[in-house]
Image 1 (tube, rainbow, N blue to C red):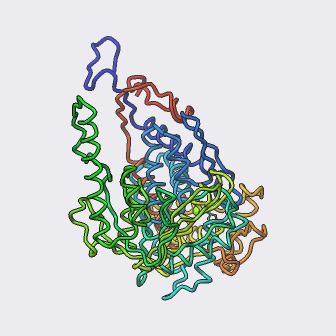
Image 2: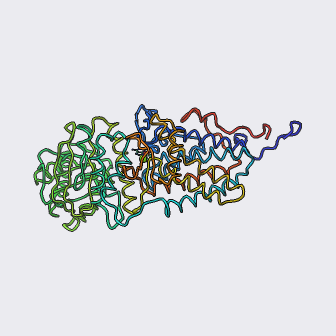
Length: 545
Ligand code: ADP
Ligand code: MG
């Protein structure tokens, strides 16, 4: 654009545009920063992050996806990195840090090739070939497969997932809980994790956490006049309030005399009484309600000896229906004995901090369990929950596929070696991209070592030489700080973890590499989220492009 002519605007004035190499550099830098941010949390010796939101809420975590979600990232390319973590979390439930780090490294290495004037299209082609070969190599050469994975292996998978997540001291016990939970709910090789409810209760120690055969609700019975426990429970599940004025009843009434008022109250009481009578008539001895329950209704329910809880979360109501075989009723006219759920016992249990909970145990559907997490503070129980969710995701994946790999950097080094061999068979510039892809995988063992205070270069070099000698399971065990056969040491991960991480990381890297033009509407000042990223806003394209 020359200065002596009128500028032509093809987009609104507030749209910032970055083009070509600048756009690429910008995006790659943003992606690298995101990867760099989570890097220090990787592995058993990774550090935690403390995230404080605008209202002062504090989260202390080591979990990649949680960190990125809480960071409120704004840069568009950085957001794509966050999406990798989310996909990883949804598809496998673990390996989020790994996936994000790989994407960052793929881009960092691509930048070297861009500097050598290799066209993005060539890099993308090479990366695609590498990703495909990686998938093949993991599936056919590297992973260990078995038809029926033993509990011992599953337990190691769970422990590997939970290592370094605040669950450290109790990970054996937690791993047992996680494996038992999965075994209970699994159906032929599929596991519906929705059947495992996680409930947290403050107080006590992490080691008091336990598996409960049924569903745990963080609700007490509405009145102490009600029985504390009911054997052979017949459970009515209702999703509306037991109050005289129904949902439509917010209408105004005018009352002009005490008699009118009394009449009104009597009418309301009668309405409520007739509602409770419908519940008694169904034969229910437990009532679980999603909404509120009026005092008068409570009185009648208590008098009839019905164990009642109110304001139960919708998701729990759905779980209860599945577990007890009952149906959630939206009108009392539909309530018959056929709609009731069944459980061996429903009882109130006093948990930590004198908090009362309700256990619905021995449900009609045995594939329904709860994991009750205990711990001294909210931060502890929250982080244990994330560790347990990682463990559950990993075991579910191994149960399904029967396919595992050795962790602790072993898989990455072996794969890197295989990809280099593959590159040697290629001609053309794509070969350079495959080599960079292979080198990028080393960032995992390197970061594992670095986070544990070991020398990353020494460790990676030693690992490579062991793998060259055919030690395909050599990894850096950070419990013993030794390079050893980590498969034997029980550092095992689902193959799916790595397959998914590599495929989504390379997809996003390719997507970012393909962008050479960023048009961003400037809607609001970039002052939230990462301040470092704030300076990465698009530059005006008119300066010297
Ligand atoms: P991610 O979010 O990617 O799952 P983690 O912080 O959970 O990140 O770390 C996972 C990495 O830690 C994996 O590469 C795994 O193999 C490794 N790891 C787990 N336990 C050990 C161990 N005892 N020694 C070395 N590495 C381990
Ligand atoms: Mg993990």
